[in-house]
Length: 113
Image (tube, rainbow, N blue to C red; front, side, top):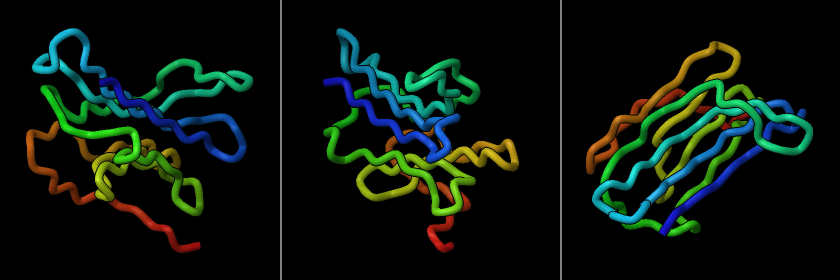
């Protein structure tokens, strides 16, 4: 099963996009988190990529949340409630990714105003 989720920044110019593609063989599946420009109301060019993992992964759409922090400085990927990756659009940095089976990312995040 393929899993996809996205969150668009309030001002509508950037989006965080998660894609898990199982393809024909789950062992060749890949999961990526993208930062994309928005063009009108559609996702446009990719401006940042974080490889999350490769291989079969047990998850459902309900296990994945892509969201912006309260200041909309960072967009993060949460799977099973854990922050696995983030783009900091102000600093131009990316955090997390490249995981095997265990996730222990130290990613800056704030939901405080």
